[in-house]
Length: 195
Image (cartoon, rainbow, N blue to C red; front, side, top):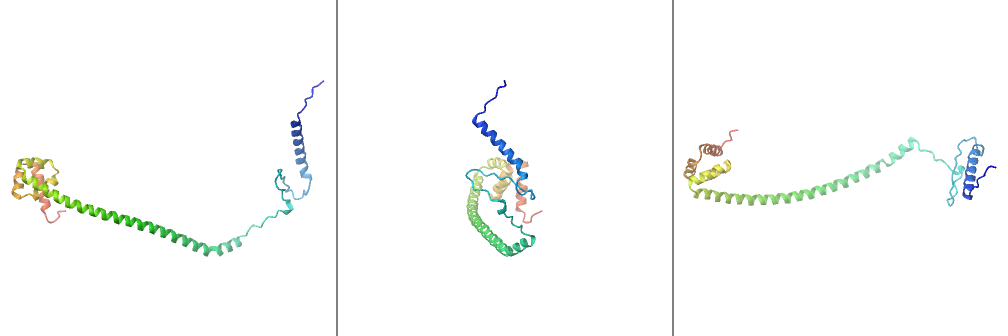
């Protein structure tokens, strides 16, 4: 004798639901208005409002091209005006930002000009002090130090010294260094630019 399996209550309900759904789906093409062929299955969950009947659904007519063109032409002026207003506001904001940056730039420029004036005064004082130091040195010591210094600086110092003192210092220098410094001093003393 074959053994029959007994199903649990839950399994029997599930099986019954599957059979009911299959029967419903199979009967759909034969039920209702088959001429339209547009029947759809709508699922309504418990607790939700009932679905709207298909007869109550109306499809709105899509606007044709002339309606769209009329709408666009009606709002074109307002849209253009709004764009102009937005662009004007943006330009005002940009102008305000530029004005702030210009003020900051002017402040920095004034600060740099003040600093440059102080630097020029300091360099003039230091330059005079350096010239006085080399003027007080022995010629052989001054020649030795100036040979080590940048050639342009050494030439500038020699040009500010008394010509007799500068000549003695150049006499104590190496021939190559003295020739270089003499060339720089001669080109600096020229009034017309050779180039």
